[in-house]
Amino acid sequence: MNPSVSAIHHFTIGCAPADLPVLLAFYTRILGLQNGYRPALRYPGHWLYAGGHAIVHLNALLQTSPARGSGPLDHVALKAHGLAATRAALRSAKVPFSETPLKGTSLHQVFLNDPLGLKVELNFDLASEEQGVQAVP
Image (tube, rainbow, N blue to C red; front, side, top):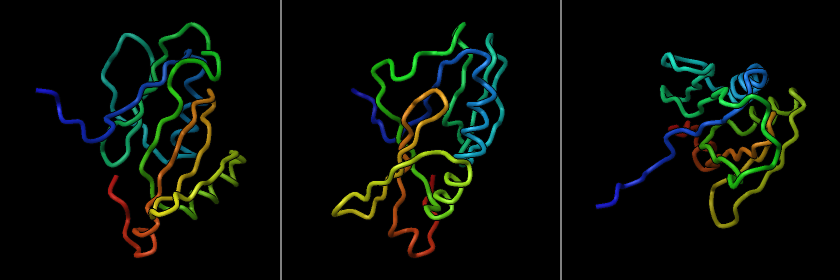
């Protein structure tokens, strides 16, 4: 029997030790994740949490920074809420982004890149936002 996959558990960003500060700042200050508990592993890093769940693992597994735009991973999509506040925070931090409303749905996507060039997609449910309902992470 195959496992029943229902959501993304986490994604790991492999980087050099020198990349950790800028990545930590991006994912905590720009995307609002919280730096939290990480077991004692053999390499430095951070686990970043949303809703009590470590969804981003930053692991300094490499000797040098990875080349931008390499590898088969195109982007990582995350459920988000607070579209207006997100726009304001991205503009304030001078982080370039683009937006795409998905026709025929209540989803609105915001695309940006992390400091190593990984494309991050934030998905906002506008129906929930209009009703003042905070989307569950």
